[in-house]
Length: 474
Image (cartoon, rainbow, N blue to C red):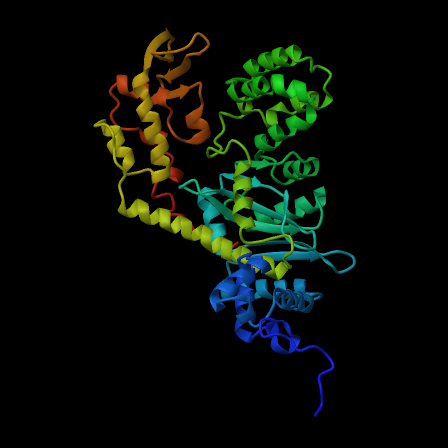
C-alpha cells in the first residue's frame, strides 16, 4: 500500500487545496455582474460566504476570483478599442439616431472618440441652453480622459448630452470633440458653457463656439485659494474675499470691494490673484448674473455627475467595461427622471396661501422648481416696496426687509412702463429663471394675481418636453 509523502490536510482546511477549488460557471457569471456594479473582490467574497454559509463552503478563494478577473482583462487586451467600435456600430444599426465617431493616432492607437444616443440628443434640444463640460476625471486604465457634456433637466437633475474620450488636453483634441458635439446636436451651440480654467480648452471654445458665453467654474477656483494664499492670510481673509466674490451685485461694486480687501490683506503682489482678477469676467458672478445659467453657479454640476458615475466605474476599467457600466449609470439617471415625471403627473404639492399665483404655478412648475418658487413666496411678507424715483419711461422702487441690519442693502426694482417689464437688481430671474421674492412682493402690492407668461420659463415646467422637435436626422 502506497503511503502519502506529505501530511494529510485536516477537514477544516480541505477547501484550500487546489484540487478542491473551482470557480464554477455560475460564480463566474455572478463575479462579472458584481464587477459591473463596482463591487470589490473582497466584498464579493464576503457576499459569497454569506450565501454559502461560510468561507469553507464557497468552493474557491478570493485569489481564485482575482485570477479569473485577471484572465478576463488579459483576454480583452489588444482588442478593447476594436470591441468598443463594434459595439457603437451595432448601436448605430439598431437606431440611426445614435452617433459616434473616433480617430486613431499615427501609431494607429485609439486616441479620441465621441458618442451620443438619441435620448441625449433629444434632451439637448430641450435643455441644451446651458452645458457643463469637465475633463477632470479619468475613468479607464488607459489614461484616456473622460469628457462628458452635461446639463440639467426641468427637475434640476443632471442629464448627459454626449460623451467623449480624448488622449490629451491639447487645443486640437478639444476642437475635434466640440466640432463633433455641434455636428450632431439638433439646435446648435449652447448659450452658455461652464468649464474648468484650462487655456487649451478656452482657446478651443472661442474657436468652435464663438457666440457662446464661456464661464469658468467658480467652485474649482475657490478650491485653489488654500494653495495660493499663505495659511495665516487664508485664515484671516479668505471669508472676506469669498463674500466679495459672491455678494457683489455689479462689476463696479466687485472691483471696488476687491481692491479694498486685497489691500487690507496685503495681497497686491500675489501674482495668482492678479491673474485671476484679469480674468474676472469669466468667473465672478457679478459679470454674468444677467445671463441665464439654469441656476448653475459653477460646474459643481459635473462634480455631482462624477460622484454619481464613480459608483459605477473606476480607473481600472477597460473601455468596454467602462461603456457597459456607464450605460447602466445612464439608465439609472434616466429612470430618476421618469420617477420625477411620474410624481409630477400624479401628485400636487401642498400650497400654503390662498394667493391665486400660488395655485396657478403649483400646477405648472415641476415639484423641484415649485419648491424653489414657494420658498420665494414665503419670504415676501418680510419685505416692503417703496417708490424711489419716477421717469417718463420707468419707475424705480426699493424693496427692503422690514427687519434689516445696518449693512443690508435694498434691492432695486425697475418697472419699464412701455414694455411692462420689471427687473430686479438681485438678477435671480435672469440667472435662475425663477421670479425672486422682490418681484413677487411688487406683484402682490400691485394686485397682479397671476404670474405673467413672460416670467414663466417652459424649461422649468412639467410640460417642458411637450412639443419638442426630434430633429435628429442631421
